[in-house]
Image 1 (tube, rainbow, N blue to C red):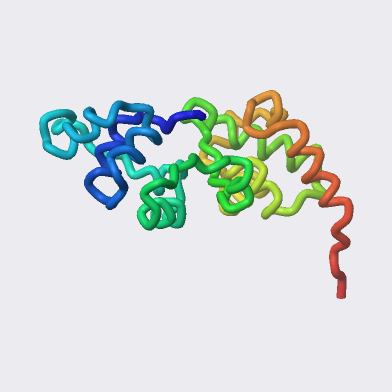
Image 2 (tube, rainbow, N blue to C red):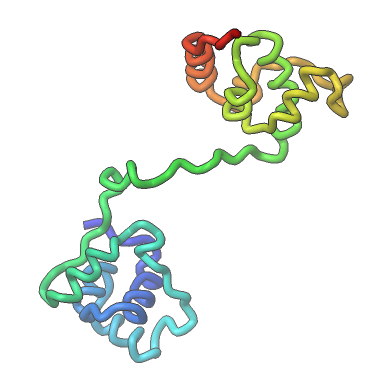
Length: 177
C-alpha cells in the first residue's frame, strides 16, 4: 500500500481533527502506534504543522467518516484516476521570461492564421483581447520590436494545441448578415 505524502504531518492532522483510532492512523501513515500516541500526547511532532489529507486530495471526508464508525476499518488513499474528472484543469502558468514573447506569437498568429478569432488566440497564448487589438492595429507600445515568431517554438503552446485551434477555426462558419 502506498503511503500519504508527508506522513507525520498527515498523522498530526488526523490526530487533531478526527476520532480515528491510533491503530488506524498508524496503519495509514506507515508509523508505529506508539509514535501516534506520542503525537497525541504532544511529546512528538509538536512543531509540525498538520497536513489536511482531504484538502490535498489524498483522502475523502466519506472515507474518514466510514473509518470513524468502524474501528476495524482501514483508511485507503484516493485513487487519482478515479478523481481526475473531478479536478478542474487550472490556468497554465507562463514564466516571466516567456511573457515578453507573447506579442511576437500574437503577430505570427495574426499573419499566418487569420481564421483564428480573438478568443481562440486568448486561450492559446493566454493573453488579453486589448493586446491582440493593439498588435492588429499596430498601436502596441513595442510595435517596432515585435517580430512574428511561431508560438510553438517560443514554448507558449504545444503543436497539438495550435492544430486543434486551427481545426476548430476551420469548422466555425462566420455568420454574415
